[in-house]
Length: 83
Image 1 (cartoon, rainbow, N blue to C red):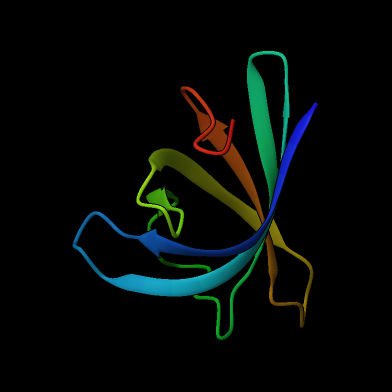
Image 2 (tube, rainbow, N blue to C red; image 1 turned 45 degrees about the vertical axis):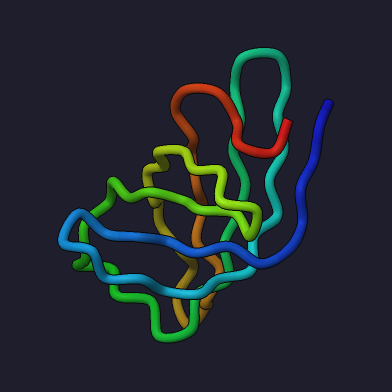
């Protein structure tokens, strides 16, 4: 199992960028994790691009978050950008 914890950027389809802290795990062909997002907008687009500090990118789908929480679930598609 591979893992990445650290800074990243979420990029919406419209190009808006938000700095986040992620905790990601890859197990075989699947990868997922969480992102800490200040002022998370639950009405924003669910499908976004995740960019790591070294420039590697992957597509992610944002899931839900607990009430009053800034931690959002992420589900990746394609190859994980941290392996």
